[in-house]
Image (tube, rainbow over all chains, first blue to last red; front, side):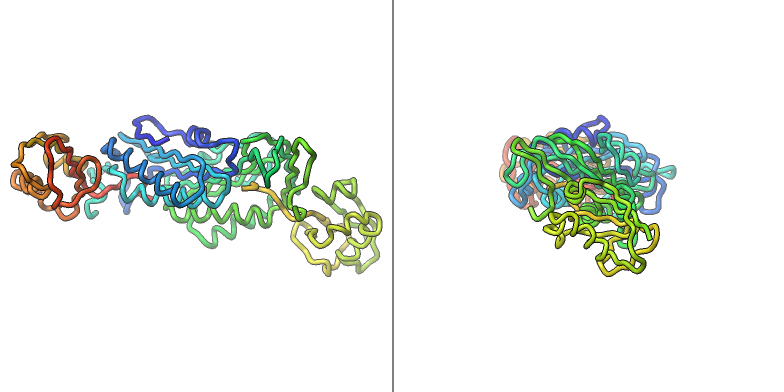
Length: 136
Length: 136
Length: 84
Length: 84
């Protein structure tokens, strides 16, 4: 359920993968490429990962979540490579018997992903390209 | 984007409908039929709506959300009629430039839906059927 | 005056009809209308405390005055969305 | 002893390689390894304060001692997920 891939992401696929007969709720978060970033027009993004460590850190996030909330399943799928406007960079889907743990765990997952999962993006715009996160 | 329907719901459809070029985040909540409810085995659920008032109340929820958060689009799709285990009863999708309003508004939408939108369910189990919410 | 009453879920099951047209005296309130139903369907009175009422698709108290042509909704507490 | 260094994003762009194998003296730390890079790539030193370091896929401080065969990650602050 933890995946780094160059292929387009499917929210429906992640939702189906986490839904079990005991689940009453599935919360998902989808990060998509915006047309503008920090005032700059974006042509496309290039995502790069440290794949083995990224999967290990996603596993850590899953463990943290299972220690905090009663959830059933969690899927975290992150895309790498070139992504155009409105394409999904990340899909997180969390299923649980009840809505509150599903929603809270989903929010936690995207916050932690942005903190500890080694994935980077380069914004490519008409006037050049920029690695994001280097003090920009 | 506010809909009561007898047809199966599509999370992907709701997500696509709310995603615009200015969006960086889409949060969704999917309510699904659980195999067990309050300790009883569920065979299937029958959802019934007061459709005109339900749509009016969904519109009220959208207005409340737009007054509280900077969101782009919101879709609330609720299914009525007979639903089997693991079928989706409700799909909420909220898009925004940023993740926090999308996630918070999505959580708010399902809470308010359960409070003010006139939709009811009857649980049908092997030993009879029960309208939910009547003090049960 | 004549009002349309729409009943839902357990309220519909008890009354046996989803929609009823009723003639009321001028000046009748939602509460007066409910008494009409309680007389004919004592079982409905048993759940009276939890019933929600609406006039023209907006939740309303029993003290609200009805007008010719109003649509009154009689319904149990809502339970949509998800049980989760 | 020999360690493998993997560089990512801006760090990879500055060094011009994504993976380097380096021979170090016994007892070297992550910080010693970084000095090796700073000498050869002064531009990397310019972003030294924000670089994240990992040993065998776990974040590590510069004071950590390296062992034969370790995999060291040199990377900018992460920016995955979404900009939103």
